Length: 278
Ligand SMILES: NC(=O)c1ccc[n+]([C@@H]2O[C@H](COP(=O)([O-])OP(=O)(O)OC[C@H]3O[C@@H](n4cnc5c(N)ncnc54)[C@H](OP(=O)(O)O)[C@@H]3O)[C@@H](O)[C@H]2O)c1
Image (tube, rainbow, N blue to C red; front, side):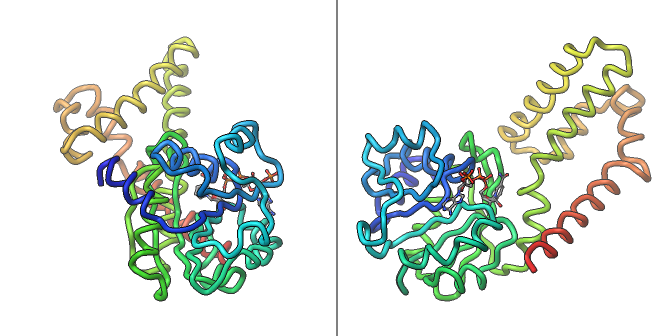
């Protein structure tokens, strides 16, 4: 979807959009909506400790901490609270929702059923990741059966403001999604950390090692994004037979290498996601 399509889709959303929780993720979504031309007057925010940036948006027309009386039943509620906050305070959101409200949640491990139970309305559950802060996230979304086509389009436009969106039909896949793309940025940052540490071990000054590791991870990510080639092809492109990369890959692709490590890491995160959803 192009940027102008996203802008049109955002502007086509009817009624007030209420954002509950304008922290890291909610704040990134709000910035994305406004940057793509959503009228600030259409947005209300519930946030007990608004940042300076959120407070500044009030002058642009964003309504901060309105009462249900002031804004009535909202067409769209976006929930970006911590799951534990939602467990305690989620039910208070019901005073803003009605049967035709779309409730779009980005809370990790919080099921469609528990969001329906607390807030009512038609629920879309989504899992973004932290590159959302720079508009480069990937979000996976799943809609409850009662979500209309228009509501799904609205959720898609709101989520797309922080990057790409993929829709799935089975909510049970959300645990594996969380383990791959939700937690995934941490795995990549760990690669940068460990590559730098290994560079120091191999004799490089720490500052140089950190810079080489950081730029290598960032540049390779950008190359992967811009290239149409599969990641395996890009890897093979830097691997000459009998060369230095091949020597390293023999270790990384060996029996206790990346395949086994990442399989176990993703399985552990998937299991934890299931446990947290209980
Ligand atoms: N960060 C990630 O990588 C990531 C990835 C995928 C999904 N998520 C999901 O995104 C959600 C938000 O995460 P986050 O990192 O953005 O957390 P966060 O920065 O802590 O944002 C949550 C915000 O909600 C506010 N809040 C607390 N109580 C509230 C209430 N009763 N009503 C309204 N707002 C309230 C918090 O204020 P205080 O700080 O004052 O408590 C905070 O500003 C989580 O459910 C998380 O699972 C996060």
